[in-house]
Image 1 (cartoon, rainbow, N blue to C red):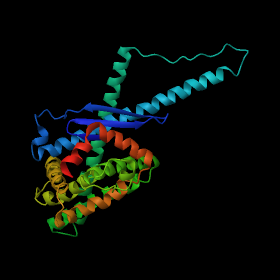
Image 2 (cartoon, one colour):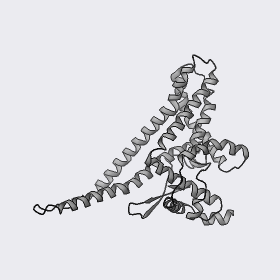
Image 3 (tube, rainbow, N blue to C red):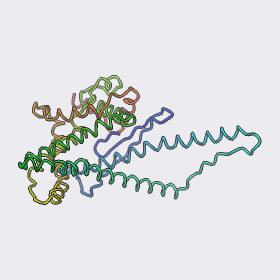
Image 4 (tube, one colour):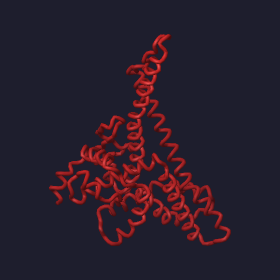
Length: 313
């Protein structure tokens, strides 16, 4: 999936090996005009929209394989019907959905998608924001320095995040997703290097990029350490509540940092970007040429790389 401005495109290689591309316009879920032009607030919008659009694109791409499974099942029924000639042959009873049933199914899918996204956010906040605080509280009896305990909390948070990334990267399906993630980065790096967007050029481009969502999440971890220094409330529940309330602020600041880092080659900026790029070694894998072909089609559906090349190189 590639997004540029309000346009986004999804390219999927179907089970029959053909590539289908869907291009559409995406409006932010935040009802604020020109939200992506407002510093800090655009970071919150970007984070929420990425989750919504990610779930939407995954659901759409998965539908191809659901259809394939249904067709395979129907073929199996037809094959079985020819085995016993003494009985009445079985027929293909595949149900043709009416428009009302299709709309009902779409509403059900949206409800499931919404519930899944909300549940995922709650679990992520619980694991990466709330749990580190309570784990770091065990050190309060040994360490009286509030700032040192906050640093320990931050390192616990980073440790949990890295452990999670390394764990899921070992899963077969997730690894394949990370290969497509690498293909997306390679396409962007290829264009920004002034090369033609071909399979050969994309394959030799880097799979890490400073504006990646992985780097954004890593900056979220780092920025949270600094902001949480200033939380001095005595009540544990109050401290947790303030942490949760600061999440939009953390996301906004992190987005501005990564946005600036993506357009700068300053030595200090490159140094600050290194940790996020290192983490991307786990969240991006080297794609094959077939994956790169898919990524190229998604890119070309939303971005005129030839005009960009003529203008900038």
